[in-house]
Image 1: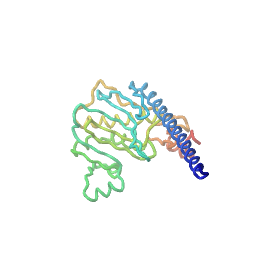
Image 2: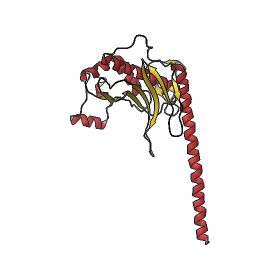
Image 3: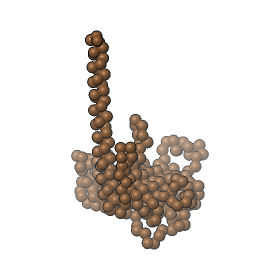
Image 4: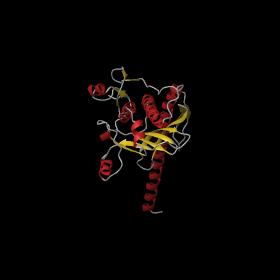
Length: 262
């Protein structure tokens, strides 16, 4: 075997060894992150009486519980691929097809362009809300009925829950889906997400005329403490993009960032 051939084989072996350790490190990292998500879901499960479905290497963990008699799921979703997009989803399953269709998401450049070209956009007549969101639906009257002042407030809070300003609410063939960009690992963020999502679903139920069962509990309320001052946060919050710790917006600004990371 020539020196050149020996050198090539050495390079190949080194590449194989490095690749092996990279794969092992990636698997360990994903496993650790999945366990963190399971731990957060377990804390939430105890607070709301939900069942935790543990994840595997190929499947993310999720929560299952009932809200107002409807099967409800909290799950983490990834689009996959080299650069996946991550979402936290809340799914309310209905026993029949939705009484009306609705799709609400933040208004962006292309949605504004679509509106100019005649794309559907329901206007509910609220100056602070209409320019912020694209609203589509099969019944303008029912969509307007769903988007009460309380529901609009919940939607604004859902959008501000993390720093990505994203929220997507849509009816599916199986019910209503509320989707937030990024995986919400922290229990306080998950509790806020659940409570706000339940308020949106209440608005949907009210609009259908089904009403809210009188013997059902109200949406969960998450008592989240500011990572800077330690006081309970009421209303909107500022969330650290690194550790997901919640803050009063003014505390986050005065502290020049996160109270845990800084």
